[in-house]
Image 1 (cartoon, one colour):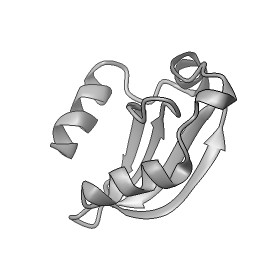
Image 2 (spheres, helix red, strand yellow):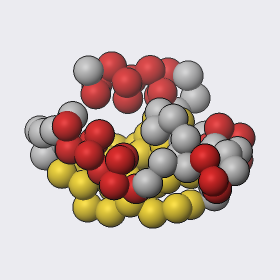
Image 3 (cartoon, one colour):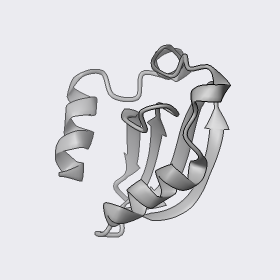
Image 4 (tube, helix red, strand yellow):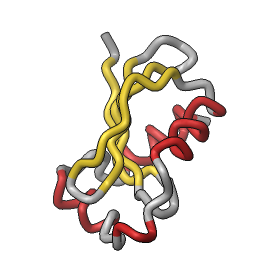
Length: 90
């Protein structure tokens, strides 16, 4: 499932920079879900979360997936949907 999500983002422009992510994360602060909600969601998908921070109006998570691949993904803080992703194949 994660590979499908990552492949979809890469095929549709992938991590097209902070301008792309900022457009997808234009959410008032009072509508943000807590970071803990994102962490719980990601851990439920088998990710080992290393950090979650606020960046350009989005949440940016650095994690390792169940197969040991390092991931960096950007999430809409209201919906917790992925709006950009990058991986380290090394």
